Length: 162
Image (cartoon, rainbow, N blue to C red; front, side, top):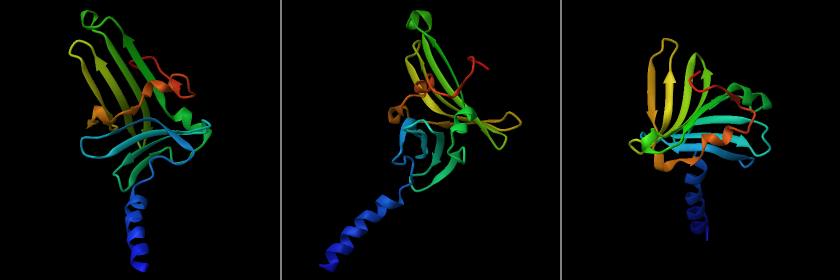
C-alpha cells in the first residue's frame, strides 16, 4: 500500500514544479511560447484588479512586471495598433503592440499580420537605453488570446508609431 502512495505522489511532483503563469483568480490576455522554449504570458485578474506580464521557463518565472499586483498596474502598459483592410491589393495589415519599461529596458510585445505575403509574427522586442534591440521570436501557432483584447481596458492607448 505504501508503494502505491509513493508512486502517486511522485507523479504529482512534476505538476508542482511547473512555474505559475496563471493563478486561480486570473485569465490569460495573450501568451505564446518562444523559439527558445520560454513562455510569455500576459494575464489579468478576473475582476480587472491588475494586469501582469510573466516570462520564463516552464520551471521558473524569470520576470514579472509589475512586481506588485494593484490597479495602478494598468497605467504601466501602453497599447497601440494599426489595422488596414483590403487584402493583398491594398497591402492589408493588422499590427498590435503592448509596451512597458523596466530598469531602463523597453519591452514591446507584438502580434502582426501582413496580407501581401500572408505572414504572421509574434514576439518581444527588448530595447536597451542605448537603442540596441534584441528580438525574442515567438511561435505563432502557440498563441493564446489576443493583445487586441486590451482595446477596451484601462491600459494606456497610444497613437500608432508613438
